Length: 381
Ligand code: GLA
Image (cartoon, rainbow, N blue to C red):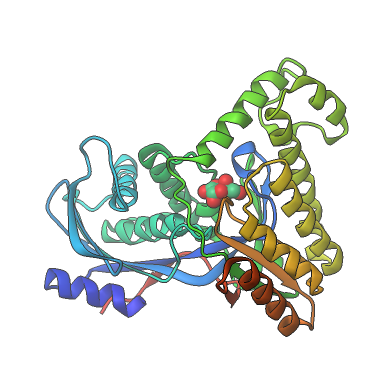
């Protein structure tokens, strides 16, 4: 894919690119829908990456091509509302301009090659925006730090594209380390890198969901409505994740449904993610795996972001003796993460395939997760 981005640039624009970068997709171990509530998350970067090769272009104009779209998109990134995948790159450009870290003429040519599947719960958009932020800032001769790249990428998606995501995906794409999970506290942005034990599988349900229009924005609005009500009980409350776990009865009294369920998920998931990070660090994989199952149940029942397909996979993994399993990413489709100890992989994958085929007449794709590193500069050729 690295070579593809450069080759695509060359074939499309007739010259070599001047700078290139790549960033990974992510698989979240635990801490789902906690990031925009000021809680902890625990993602790993996966081996699939997005490569972006860039060169100078006309002022104000982005010319973009990708291995997934044959047509070259040409947009004036300064003007109006943005749409399509190019909106993500345009959002990045706007943010780089604001930081004084955009290519001088303020225009660029961009070629993208990626093996991160889109809308599969693996944060393909953050892989794209973080890689684009790195490549375009390099073209400008600016050296942004990983956290700055994450900030540019986050604002591109949140402010310009209009997906009310949290900061997990961009921080993971920017800061992840090979063989480590990233414990990120989203209120303070403090990070710890935790070595990973066990073996991780990713089971893709094949169900795709477009986030921008939908459910994530709705959940986020529900969480904000919950905070507004809970502030009457605890005026200093800023984040839903900061609600004291010992005060659940009070939370239940203060909130009507569905806000009550959403808030119970966020408070419970916050505790699970922090405890989970400790267990992982101490290699207590069995107990960590139980937390993954609990997290899935909470996503299913309280946050209402699972689907029957995802539930089928999790139940099959459990029956076959996996240490843990849960939907990963926003949910409403996408993939399930499965944690295994030393043995039993063949049995678990067999049972998942069998159960899924019996229910849906097809088999899900199953891959091993190789926790990898965050954004990096790539050679151009
Ligand atoms: C999406 C968002 C993330 C996070 C997850 C749910 O992937 O982009 O910021 O909120 O959903 O944990």
